[in-house]
Amino acid sequence: MTCRVRFAPSPTGHLHIGGARTALYNWLLARKLGGKFILRVEDTDTERSTQEYVDSIMDGMRWLGLLWDEGPYHQMERMDIYRAHVDQLMREGNAYRCYCTVEELTAKREAAQKAGQKPKYDGTCRDLNLQDDSRPYVIRFKAPTKGTTVVHDAIRGDIPFENKELDDLIIMRGNNTPTYNFTVVVDDVTMKITHVIRGDDHLNNTPRQILMYNAFNYPVPTFAHLPMILGSDKKKLSKRHAATSVVAYRDLGYLPEALLNYLARLGWSHGDQEIFSLMDMIEAFDLEHVGKSAAIFDPDKLNWVNQQHIKKLGDAELTHMCVPFFQKEGVAWDNQEFAIAAVRSERERAKTLADIAKQCRFYFVDQVEYDPASVEKWLTADGKALLQKIHDRMTQVEPFTAEAIGAAFKELVTESGLKMVSLAQPCRVALCGCTVSPGVYEVMAILGKEKTLKRLTAAINKS
RNA sequence: GCUCCCAUCGUCUAGCGGUUAGGACGUCGCCCUCUCAAGGCGAAGAUCACGGGUUCGAAUCCCGUUGGGAGCGCCA
Image 1 (cartoon, chains in turn red, brown):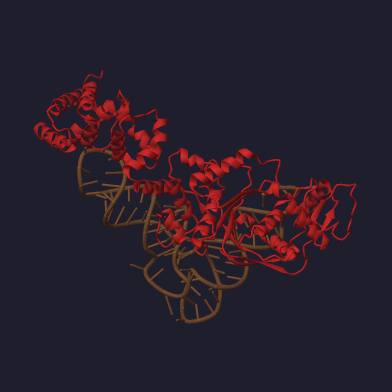
Image 2 (cartoon, chains in turn purple, orange; image 1 turned 180 degrees about the vertical axis):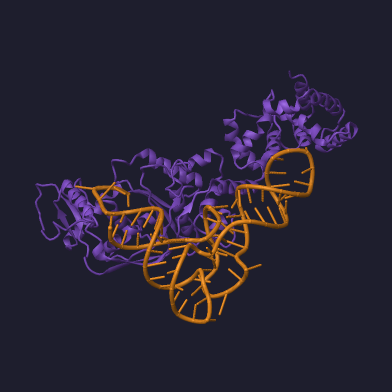
């Protein structure tokens, strides 16, 4: 049997970190086993589902590269299928009409809570066999009250549940739309899903779903419940801890492969390996090494992983990927070689693509933007006097390469009897506006003699 | 309240009866060095939540306790 997995988000929000990881694990398993990855939109909650979120979720998945082989299927377009399955259950006596009102149910639930009982449906309409079409009703699944249902979970092992703990859940609402625990079973069955990989908030729903598989006499898929992802305070991940939408990470300058790498390792391991390419992940991924406990999202480690992936890119490719971030900085260029050289010089100082663009700004501006503190410290009278010497010496350097510049610079240092820093720092401020940058020889070489001399002069004349 | 899940350095984790409990992020120090990074080296950091068992031997197996989380919707 070929592997068929699905990612089934409900379009009531953007694709978030947790959802992205669930999608990733499903996708990885499908790729590894040569199976199919199916996208299914669970939109039966018509109150909260929107097309904007459907689009947003798909955008997120496309950016990450988690492309689906089938779908998107929309549950709202599958009503006939659900209807037929409800009819079958009714026919076979595995479902019944319930005329209890929302008010009655709420009251019972509250009473049960108060009495310290588990607030489950009391079965009022279970054996009444009512057929009154004039009053509103819902349809409930008639679950067995005795016996044990065991969930075979690929991550947690066998988990037994007493059927008496479960109740008859609503499968069809008063407005004739089906509910989640029912549609998920019907869909997974009719879509021939072999592995259900989802968040462990669904673990408690699983036995009731298995009961429905049994009622239909359908084979039960393999289940795998993933632990939650938490914020730094061990609370549910929210906008306080991380971006709500994964596409926000794109805009922050993270590489999709890096985010995937980080997410893969958050809850799954492969020995001591930390850095994975997409191919590495597909080859190494397995459900056996998925952890059981919740994990805290760590932005610092994400940064490091992103940096590792940036390192693997070629200069030209990296420069190309930075283009949107340069645009955001208001930087444009006509000289591609110059841009690549700039990026090459800054890349190892960056955690994100946005960092690269920001740090490269100074190469492209006409007027250096000075950092006041740096100016105060280094563009002193003494500093300017040194800059004048540097300026004069640089006019003689030919060809204007980093190597030649370095040689000239060292001569100046020797002649002045000062330390290298005393010359390099004023020079750096003159060239870049601040005290942090690539090596000054390299910066000068990239800028070229003309711009270098111009910037040195500007700094000398700065009031 | 009831049911279920979970528990190894601050964080992600390795471990699947015998290890000086390993790696990574972060932190700190040293080296490199024109700054910052990167890189190299090193350090601190875990009584393996706690208490009982089983065993010659337990982070690993069993039971309990505590602590966290989830579910108990005409949400998904």
